[in-house]
Length: 141
Image 1 (tube, helix red, strand yellow):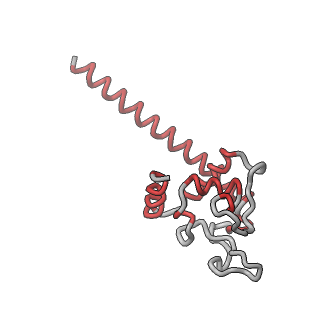
Image 2 (tube, rainbow, N blue to C red; image 1 turned 30 degrees about the horizontal axis):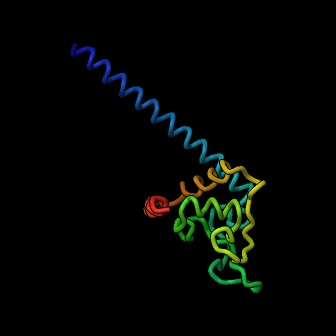
Image 3 (cartoon, rainbow, N blue to C red; image 1 turned 180 degrees about the vertical axis):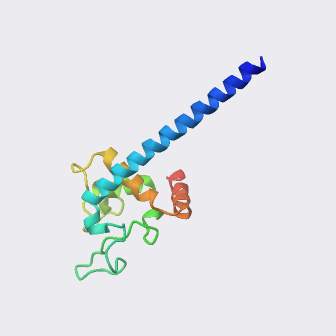
């Protein structure tokens, strides 16, 4: 009887570890895909290293704000996943009506899944402090 319990316990542990590594590998693959999509669709404005455009908090001559950074120094982490999704898919005016921005929506250029993959890549670059803050935002959205 003891042997059966030991074998079952070890089997469950091996299964859990295997599934953990499978999930980690899948997450790493998703992050890599998100990084490639970001490079293709977003880096030209938001920077290869997510640094945004210079003076992103100061309006240009046309009255529009430059592209903000998506790293810890920006404010992307202030927004819930749903807000980030809407901004990316439909443009800033999707959450701030009549707001003029150079941020185009990517509807028709990226699938919903691709947009969420890019958002997950961006989130993967944040420090734990900002990931935790943003996770709290998601709970109340």
